[in-house]
Image (cartoon, rainbow, N blue to C red; front, side):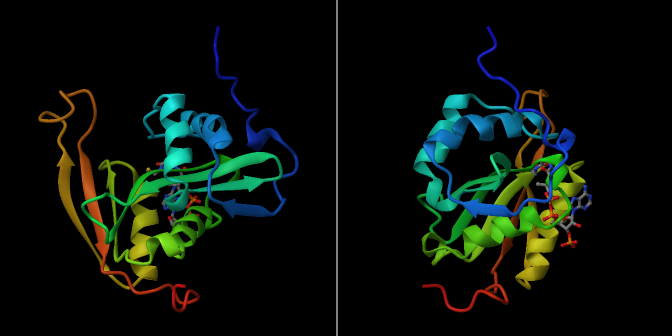
Length: 186
Ligand SMILES: CC(C)(COP(=O)(O)OP(=O)(O)OC[C@H]1O[C@@H](n2cnc3c(N)ncnc32)[C@H](O)[C@@H]1OP(=O)(O)O)[C@@H](O)C(=O)NCCC(=O)NCCS
């Protein structure tokens, strides 16, 4: 039996003009987050349990976007214990029907505006060489925060992935200036 029913593709629905709301994930978001990730190009599909754990333990540094009853966006992220100044962004996904409207950027900014990110000055992530949309999204973040991006190999195709996955390049973005509309973090 297939445990996971695919959510009906949002792009086939007539009404995609509803307001989009952002909020921290809850444990019950694990399954819809998993479905969205499974529908997204470029992203590795991890176990449902993994998304349940992320939505439970890293809610303060992750976000989901909903449109009516549909989950249309997610950023999973955490602050590595030994790097309290860094938000590590693991996966970002936006449903095709909601892409290229600034949603991914809004989700990243929303997380960075939270008290949990008060000490965060840098964002790190990994991207493959061919993921233009992801690179454009992080380039846009560096422009909004008026800072640079350092790029280095993090997980190498041969050394880490046994030739089963393309090299993942680490992007380190920062030191970031506060967003224009953010002011002082509380
Ligand atoms: C990457 C992704 C999350 C972007 O979501 P989005 O909501 O469409 O992004 P935004 O509208 O906030 O755009 C952010 C920036 O990226 C640019 N961008 C977005 N999609 C792009 C694309 N396909 N090609 C080139 N640039 C793109 C936008 O123009 C914008 O730049 P700007 O501010 O200079 O105009 C989305 O394409 C996606 O879900 N892709 C599949 C999963 C993935 O690759 N995730 C990232 C790796 S974890």
